[in-house]
Image (cartoon, rainbow, N blue to C red):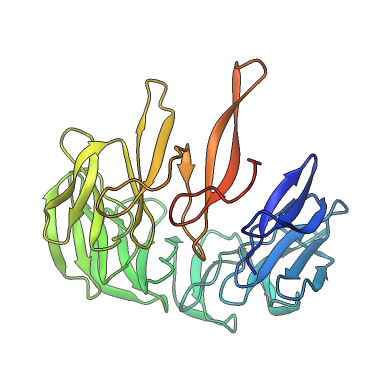
Length: 331
């Protein structure tokens, strides 16, 4: 059962996709469930994992700052200790990878990115047993959920050397780039030099290059966002042809065959809508931001006026793949 967080005054409860309350509002905060596990925090600062099929609760006293539950594991940080370290728990709240990292990102298909203990300024890949893989880098870009390659930065003092790495932390080839983004569908967007972008394959071979200063972080449905000479964005196919003309301020993939397209006003405030790869809008709502789809649900945000319209704050909801709002009211 998929559960979503809904605010009731100062507390959060959990509702199903029909808006029915499944767990009453009793938490300081709650997150949408992933892989059948919802992560919540009580008002006494206890992290709890909830199995959405049985509603069984698994408290985790002594652990805080939970990450995103992924591939059966959740990063958590030691609570109430100086210089806390990060480890990983399973769906029952049991620590299965001991705390030994400064940072622990969610697991992907082949492992996870962690910051090595010490000063925490180097990153490395670990496998599902918590063992280090490959070499250390200054920074490793998060992998696409379906991808097996991504980019890594080599050096603190030189912004230039970015390289292609695989899920085991091994560098692919010797070529360096200004930027290397996420592999999806066998292609990786890169910035070759300032003013030239394109994409390479998983062996590091150049596939296409064009004059531009902007490119999206990954391909989706054979398309990638590219910035044109008019400083507007569109979608380009693998052969470098425009499939969605560059007329937007914002273009980004947010899921399988799903994109957000939008504009910025004179104050740089964004307005975006959900669309498919043909440019057909889905749903009737406009938003400030659309997150990536996970299990066919994406978080959306919009601005709301506060303090007699002089200030603004963001409020959130969730949408399905057709752009329909899922929560009965905004949080």
